[in-house]
Image (tube, rainbow, N blue to C red; front, side):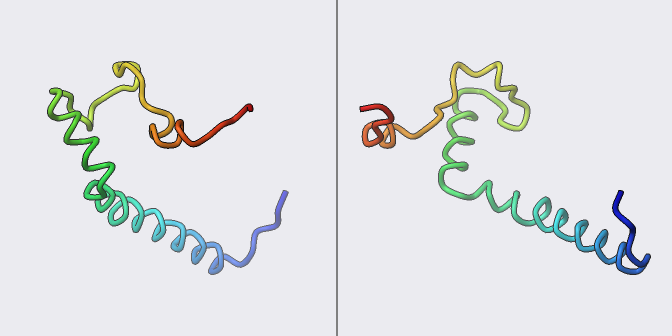
Length: 78
């Protein structure tokens, strides 16, 4: 088992971890909604009558694993 550092150092590490989570959750993820591919996917789901915030992946036919252009250019086994 790892020995704990000083209590002040542990509190600082906890605060830094919480700050990172807050930045990602409160800043990065909401901005991701405006990014082109994500915004287009949300618009497509809403056009089909699916609430993108409440979907389960078992309800979808199949999510593409790769974009079509990758499939055209990528040869896994010659």
